[in-house]
Length: 166
Ligand code: ADP
Image (cartoon, rainbow, N blue to C red; front, top):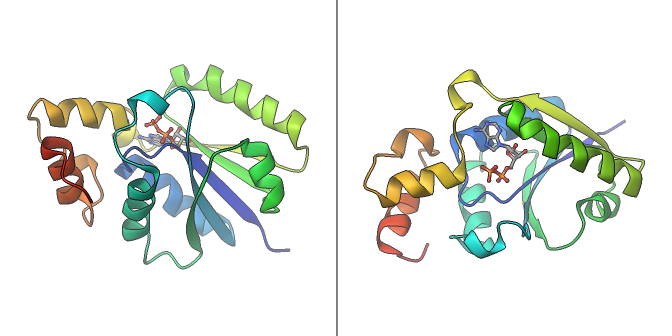
C-alpha cells in the first residue's frame, strides 16, 4: 500500500539540514508533502513570507519527483487527516529537541490516531544547524553558504543582507 509522509516545519529559510531529512524521507515513502506551517511561536520572528519559503523549497527539491510543497495554517493532525497521511517525519538534532517533539507527537496521536510520528536522526554535520542560527550569523556578516542548499543560497543571503524580495 502506498505510504504518504508529511515533513512539517517553519523552513524560515530552508537549510541543508531540512533538505537532508526531506531527501531521506523521499527514499522511504511513496509520497512526501513538505508543509510550511505558520508556527504561532515563531510567527513574529519569521523573516521570509510563507510564499517565499515555499518557492525556496520548490527550487531545491525539484529533482525529487515524489516530493510536493504545500502550506497550512491550522492543526497538523487535521492536515494529516485531510491528506490521508500515514507518517509525520521530524528531524531530531539533540536532546534539547526531544521534549518538545515528544509532546507534539503525543498530542498529534491523540488528535489523529491514524498518523504516526517518526523521528529521523540529524546528520552529525548538521546537528548544530537551525534557520535562526543562519539568520543571525548572516546578518552579522558571517558566511552561511555552506549551510544552505546550493540552488537557493545566493538568494537567501541577499534577502537576509539587503531585504531584497525573492
Ligand atoms: P527550525 O527548528 O530550524 O526552525 P523547522 O521548524 O523549520 O526548523 O523544522 C522543520 C523540521 O526540520 C523539524 O522536524 C526539525 O526538527 C527539522 N530540522 C531542523 N533543522 C534540522 C537539522 N539541522 N537537521 C535535521 N533536522 C532538522
